[in-house]
Image (tube, rainbow, N blue to C red):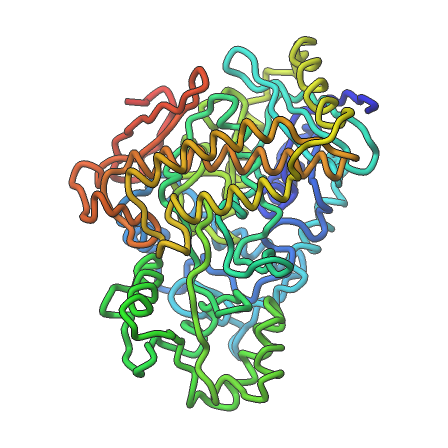
Amino acid sequence: MKTKRLKTDILIIGGGTAGCYAALTIAENSDAKVLICEKAHIKRSGCLAAGVNALNAYITEGKTPQYYVDYAKKDADGIVREDLLLTMSERLNAVTERLEKLGLVILKDKNGKYVTRGDRNLKINGENIKPLLAEAVGKLGNTTVLNRVNITDLAVSGGRVLGAYGIGIEDETFYIIEASAVLIASGGAAGLYKPNNPGFSRHKMWYPPFNTGAGYAMGIKAGAEMTTFEMRFIALRCKDTIAPTGTLAQGVGARQINSLGEVYESKYGLTTSERVYGTVRENAEGRGPCYLRTEGITKEQDESLLKAYLNMAPSQTLKWIESGLDPSQQNVEIEGTEPYIVGGHTASGFWVDTHRATTIGGLYAAGDAAGGCPQKYVTGALAEGEIAALSMIGYIADKSPESIEKSDIKAHIGEAERFLGAGVSPYTTEQLEEAMQTVMDSYAGGIKTGYRYNESQLAVAERKIGQLITLSDQLRAADNQELMYIYELKERLTVCRSVIAHLRARKETRWHSFAENLDYPEKSKIYGRKFVNSVLENGEIKIILRDINEGGAAFEHCDKQ
């Protein structure tokens, strides 16, 4: 491969929601040079690629940022960083107004006020939300976007990030990027577990299948402290299409019912994890299938649902049309997805301080990559991108990019060339990925086991994932596209290993389905006051329990207990 060296003040890994907004913020508040590396294309990458029909995090009239903090804390059963939630919540409305100025259509009533959906949501026409962000970034004079460049690892020395390495998927170039600060905005991790739909349809899932946990994996390998990977996210979705259910539950007030017509949602609880758990239990006890009850809604509501899903999940609208029955004529069957690791819905991700700095100097995280702050959604990711951007501007004020050591560069180029080298692997990347998903599904609490696991199963999962990591070193790629697939598999395997360690470490069941530990089926007072964190040291995952600090006081890494 050709090699190319680049220097920038700030490197942003991932051109999604948080990454785009961070670039906009940096441009407005400094003259720092910014480089965004996006392995897809910034116009349609990340979680917003297909659009959304609501902004799920907004401080509606009569509510306060603290109200949102309290909601998220309750839903996560106390395992949150209130400083992160509060600083995010205080910015939700401002970033929403900024989106509207960029051209996003936010629905308004006859008085010119935003149309709300519940206590915390706004209705939008959001098919073009990502192109709007990408277009704004494209107009920035100080920002360069490299599309189809897959960042594979960080360059770290002496506890400080110096930049990153990447491969040009289409230009056959190995990139060495030196930067004074780096933002991980690469999203969460999908594809760790066997998904709902097999074979050709396996990518029909809740979270973008191209989000591999790359940022997590880079941080883990670099020795960054990670948090709460055991708080997996499992979405409650429309069966087969894996379309969102919130539009049904909040938009038309559809309630969860079993095959007997009984409303069961209040029986198990109304937090996000409890809604999934109730559906799993009703099916297991023979009262399935389970549905969201839409029969009897109005024709106006019918039309509203058909349009809403066409805006974000067209397959659900097509399913209604193909059946010849509107939502008012048939209830919508629901199911849980496979587990994901995603810091925008749960508290999984990098352990960051209030400024979104990780435990590695100069490395920041925002959006789904940052932990401790669940229920971010779109606007929360924007807010965190803004916070991280302002923090990085301050960090680089007296710094310039340092040179990466030649030996480290040589090692990373050598790894890429080895995968591209001669020889035939006895396995394909796809085969090893399927094996990984089977292991996680069977032994680490996937769909097959009703999301449940025990100590013995996790021990098997740990051993088998270790074997797959070894086998992955034998893979070979014919071109840079296949090389990217190898790195994506290795990223997922790295995250799987940490997920298993975290599931073993939290010896309780605090969130049904999200972390259903059969050896410890009850809540623990001890773990109810602790974060489960981890650091990779000398090849081994070290578990660290951190106290939960009540209140929104600022947290700095020097205050670690």
